[in-house]
Amino acid sequence: MELLQLKYFCDAAQSQNFSKTAQKFGVPPSCVSQSIKRLEKELSVKLFTRSANKILLNNKGIEFYEKVSEGLNIINNAATAVTDDGKNGEIVICVNSNRRIVMQTVKKFKSIYPDVNITTLHPTDIYSDQFDLIIDGENDALKSYTKHKLVTENLLAAINKNNPVLKKSNFSINMLADQPFISTNKQSPLYRLTNSVCKKYGFEPNIAVLSDDPFYVRKYVELNLAVTIAPEFSWYKQFDDSVVFFPIEGFTRTTYIYTNPNKYISICTKNFIKFLINECTEEYNLLEKQK
Image (cartoon, rainbow, N blue to C red; front, top):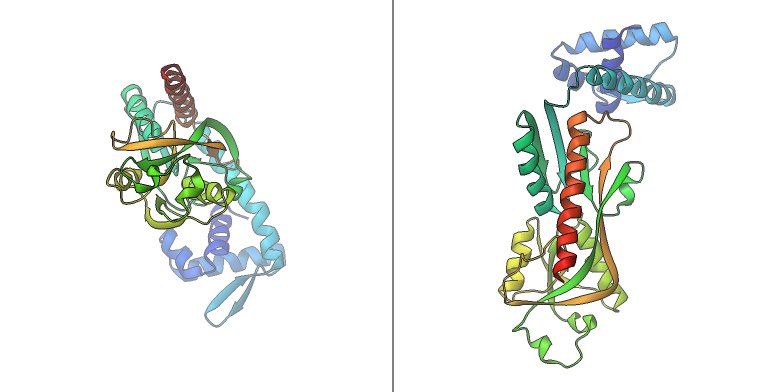
C-alpha cells in the first residue's frame, strides 16, 4: 500500500471520477484506475461500484475513505509542522464578519511579518478546506470547528434622519415593518440577525436590497433609500451625520474566529489570531471609554 495510491483513492472518492483525479495529479486516467484496482486487490474488497461511465464509492469504500483521509491529514500536518518557522507561510481567511477590523489587523501584521502571504475572501463557501481561518457569527454549519471569541457587540437600527418614520412619537423597531431594508448577503451573520430582530418585533423585514459590500449597505441608508440593522462596534463612525441610531434591546452580535480541527494551524496563523483578538479588544475598549 503506497502513499500516492492512497492519495489517488481519496481524491477519486471525493470527485467520483478517475479522469478528474488523473487531471489533478497530471497522470493518465488508466494510471489512477489501475492503482485503485491494485489497492482493491491488496485489500481483497471492492471500494467502488463501477458502471459504464460512472464510479460510486460503496459502503466499504466509505469506511476506508474515512480512516485513510484522517491518516493523510495527520501526515500532511506533520510534514508542514516540521518546516514551519512562523516567519513565512500563507494564511487564507474567509471573512463573513468584521471586515474593517480584519483588514486593519492584516495591515499591522504584514508590517511585522512581510513574508507571510495573506488572502482574504468574502463572502464565500465556508466549507472549503482552503481556509485557515473563518471569521463569522454563531453558525451551526461550523459547530465541529474550534472557535475563539472575537467580540460581542450591540445592534442598532440605522435610519436616515429625514425618514418620515422618525416623525412618529415614541419610536419602536416595529414601526419599520413597512420600510425597505438593506442587508448583507443571505449567508452573513447580519442577514440572520436582521431576520431574528424583526421576528421578535412581530414582522418579516422587507429586505429590498442585498449587498456583499457593507460600504453600500451604509450608503443606501445615508441616501435614505433603506434602513438597516447595524453592529455598533464594527461599523463605528462608518456612517455620515445623516444617519441616526436606535439601540435594539436584547440583541447582540458575537463574532468568532473558527479553525478547522483537522487542519494544521501554522505558527503564523496562530500569531495572526493573537493580533486580531488584541486589535479588536483594544479598539472595543476605546469605544466603551468614548461612550
